[in-house]
Image 1: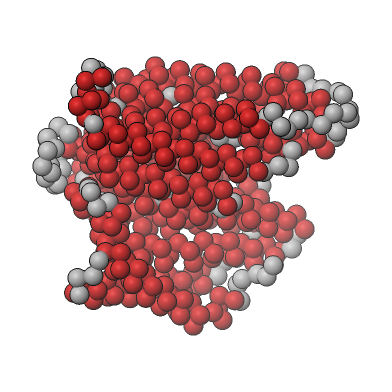
Image 2: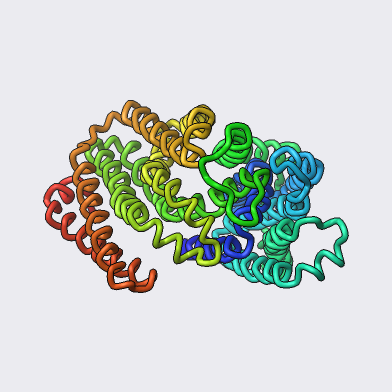
Length: 519
């Protein structure tokens, strides 16, 4: 958990300076590469670690150490082939994908350079699953942090070199026509180098960690191992693929709708009318969605604890424990998400101005979309533990189906709203889709578990969150009259809003305590 948190923070450290260097157009190229990369990466890599870890743990428990070695070998062969196929697919689609979504080939270099990451990711996932199955989480933890450090350092250094020496880059690479495309490719190269570094890390530690000898020498057939790995990893990969389809939906609909119907936003200096759709999409994806994803990445970790709590209560038939565990998981997510959303909503101009001082046009464009995203952020934060709880009550396929329908809702509302609202419509449709996802998941969970939820408790948290946002807004207005720096305004407003929020929660603590469960 510590390494996962560190990796998320390193991701923020990477994306924010990168956006300041690339701007809206450059982030459009960068996001184009990621929009193709992430679905393929999710389909091929997600689920590998869990599948390998499960089979490894089973073999270790039975003392089948020879099977452990064979399992690792077969998994590397199988998923190296899968990763190679995924990388080749990205390479094949690089130019047509860039041409279709950006109107040119400026993003093709970025798409091409990220392709090897799928291959490296598959190899790393096998190695992580092997050590996790051996009850050793340190290699996974260290490799995650190392990967984040390499990505941040290499990506930012390479991107800054390109932006600082455009003439040198244009002279050395005659095929480069837009320095922003080259800078985006340089930032993407940092991602690829980080995944290659993870493979190198596991290659080194493999010299020091050996599979125990002895025990049962019986081994599974290669066909049986491949079947177990494939059919275990595939459902997780498909679920992750559906989750990442929203990025392609946004890229296609935002660029296409704005190109066809126009935009209420005037093109900033240096941005032509043909580049404006890509500028708007790049700003939205690189800034608004980056800030939007920060809090859900924290509440996502609550799902692991909720799953074991709910599963244990359901198997034991303890209805009260099931209801207490349900309310605790959902209420904890709500308590975290609501004040965060309220604070970001009222302080979005100050937050974006502070994080992206070198891109004022892009930051100003994202103020309204970020505010529209906040309702969806709260719903997404609560949905993460709810998805784990659905698995615990015997509905493992429900999250995939819900996310698939939610993506369809997102597509429909994007096409309906963007022609009239511009990129604000894409943000609003995101919130609409996550409201639908949360409502549907909650309805299915209540029917499957039979629990009764006291929604008044959540209403009180929403009320406290409203007071938090109001007090933060008033504090920010007062601070701006004294012309304080943005950082001081944000910190002061957050401190006042947080204090008011905690006071209201304490005032309502009698109700909250009645629905919380002990250790």
